[in-house]
Length: 250
Ligand SMILES: NC(=O)c1ccc[n+]([C@@H]2O[C@H](COP(=O)([O-])OP(=O)(O)OC[C@H]3O[C@@H](n4cnc5c(N)ncnc54)[C@H](O)[C@@H]3O)[C@@H](O)[C@H]2O)c1
Image: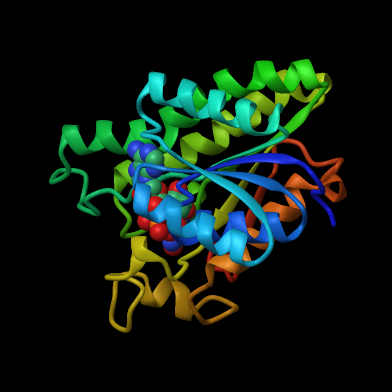
């Protein structure tokens, strides 16, 4: 087991990629804090982890709210006494509109949920990791961290920004024992993409013309997150690991 007894927080864990990360990490022996704004989604992920023989607790959190992040971190410490791994995975899509039609409100919302939340969570977990002598952080970026697409300027800018934050934190805390990396999924079949990852949808060409020629599954992303969290990735700092079926090779 690659993550035996590691205490892990996963945000956006009530659905999709976050849920798959919880399940894959628990399979490797991790104890998981399942954190999401949707309580029902959290409860279902916890049920699935426990059904598979793993250990998990649910914490409802809005990752844009500092006090709720504090409570999530406190809950993790209370349950497991430490924090070894944090997967900053909560995220939303934008309006997917051309820049001239996009709204400032949506820009702020996407930046807050997708990027500022990671900055806020990291500032609260890194002190715990430093006290433990180290830890690892995995931020969910996207193929949109590399390329423009129909996802829209707010989403694309947010996912590029995540890669900058990831590199900066890796630079600042690597020598203190904290590894920070990003995973960059292509189009994955989840609730986020249920209306667009379809035949004739805006991402069909990007996906079907790519080397894999199909949409991805959450488990395929989660396995990369397990690798980055484990000691197998001990020399990886500030990396952006693409799990995108090759959709950004062009
Ligand atoms: N599905 C894809 O094709 C794809 C591709 C690239 C990147 N991503 C990224 O992967 C991550 C997970 O997406 P997914 O596809 O699993 O989508 P999803 O909608 O299934 O899951 C996202 C989860 O984040 C939660 N969330 C949203 N706002 C939150 C908030 N303020 N506080 C706490 N939780 C919140 C939602 O409740 C949801 O459970 C996101 O960051 C997304 O941008 C997804």
